[in-house]
Length: 178
Ligand code: CA
Image 1 (tube, rainbow, N blue to C red):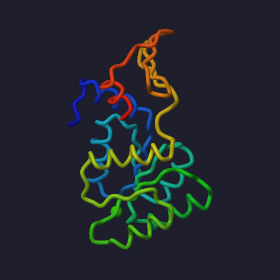
Image 2: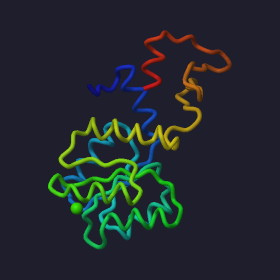
Image 3: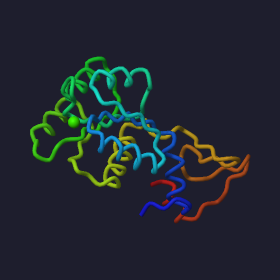
Image 4: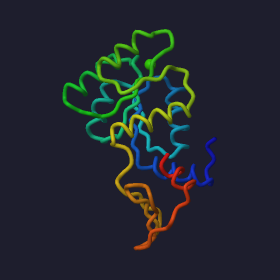
């Protein structure tokens, strides 16, 4: 359950704010859903609708992760992926594929996708995959998160308040590490 104001959801929200997601999706309802739901989880989102824009923004906006629809109006999403990898861009990519086109999944992964998710998908499943891919890629959260006078140390075992370390309960550690 996502509930802002609760400890774990609030910590996750703050972590997500530092994660820039470039969503490449030409279907307006899905683009709106991604903007709304991933925004609600705290992610910083930029949505583009073409392969051409995707390749431009992958370079200039410096996202942490790309969500890539494979069926785009100008070029196939797989070509975006191949071009990224051809220019040695290690940007983590999760492909969004249609349920009735399973071949796309295999093709997408072969072309260098980090994961794929089949439409229609649940936003909490997408969120979990985003976090898993970012953990693997180690391009997610910055080394140290700052919240007012509090800092979450890079090793995520303690919260720093000024020079003091706040002791965390096992439950709090568990929540922060997620
Ligand atoms: Ca599409």
